[in-house]
Image 1 (cartoon, rainbow, N blue to C red):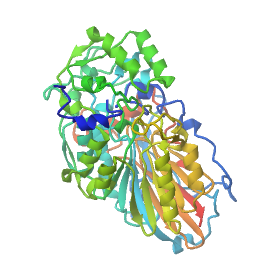
Image 2: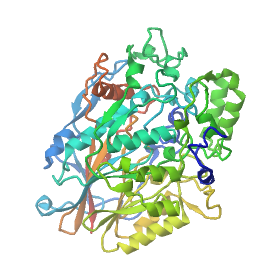
Image 3: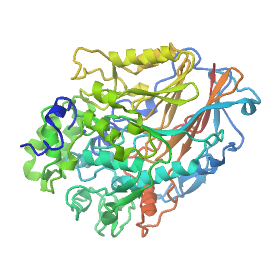
Image 4: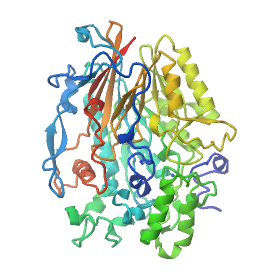
Length: 582
């Protein structure tokens, strides 16, 4: 019997599609091909489209960051994590000045007195690209770091502690920093997990709902990943020998690996929360739709590849960059021929990939209800239809739409099917007298993959430009909120705003509060405010407590080799007031 038969049933195999798992890919390939996981980069986000992209006034900044909400002091309006000495080889973090709120008037002028008239319609938090990571997973491709330093992140072993600290900060906010209205819910916009594995899914759901997470797989008493492998292209925190990261100032931290695998207690979100799926939640390494079952079997097995000859790593990276790897063929071929180079690890069935059916079932499990709602947006109707799309109420006359943009045929870029596009248009028409907010993982400029969905081979796929065109045709659409590119970007699209938020795996590790208000003068204001985790800004390398690890998670991310330094985005994509005429 297959090693994964207990984890992936025969029925699920038919819907497996991509079950074997970026910014488009897990560590290794994802960071190597860029912060979007593909050829489209956040820095190359497209120009705004259509009428209304230039407005009656240029964006302006308020003189001082003085929002009305009592939670403002916990946001980047007040202060933020910043390098104390940008010229240092290893940059230590301290308190930096906050970012002022920028008023963007491309669609409507900001009228005086609106703060006294406005009525809050919805107030919530967006979390995205948590990438809760099993760093010992056999399908990970850390070994391409020999050709691309950014292809492996030294801090990933602390992703669970980092996520808990972000949850603690959300819980501490209570109200929106711009309006003071109570926060109603939180939404994750995908890449909640990193390797599409069952253990990561359980860790993510436990983090969000509350409970104890032990971020370890394989041997319960030992670390079997790359950071004690003796291979000096990886940071070895627990020895004094030189390695590629210590040469750049990375510290020696005795006890790091044991601390990283320790149980972590999460309070869970105190708010109701909803979930949107990303490519890392659906595909092996966030990109591969292996229908042979090889990667699924490899994931639960006893062998792991830690290094490669440089020329083989370069060849794999080239194939990934060209986008010709949807079925995982090059990676599978590599793993088949490199068996002698592999090391023995402890098998673990919890590393099996999860199917869409298992993803839905896990969300609907009462053990993961937390602050609710049951299913976190998903219902039994989703199970019956094998759909990951749903709607929910965001407040007075505001409807949220969660749409699955993953290409189940494989690849880290996204698209939607004709049925999904028609369903979305129906929702927009149904709520023509209200407001609609679209939540997806991919953004408009990373939805260009039109490979057919293996489950619907005759159905056409549609890109981000078509989603933008659809939303622009309907006055009810006010915002499209997403992630994937790990960078803060805000784009005007003729009649609505696209808001893309930085990840919590790459520095600056942020989430975003969004407040929608009717100014009762013919305009709406969408306030966006970035937040960081609750972890102390200054790190202490001897503090391996839960909060100490969360601080270290941030500082190591700042210093990660090959990491992009522009992910905070431009000033008009951070703390904003986005005006709309209504």
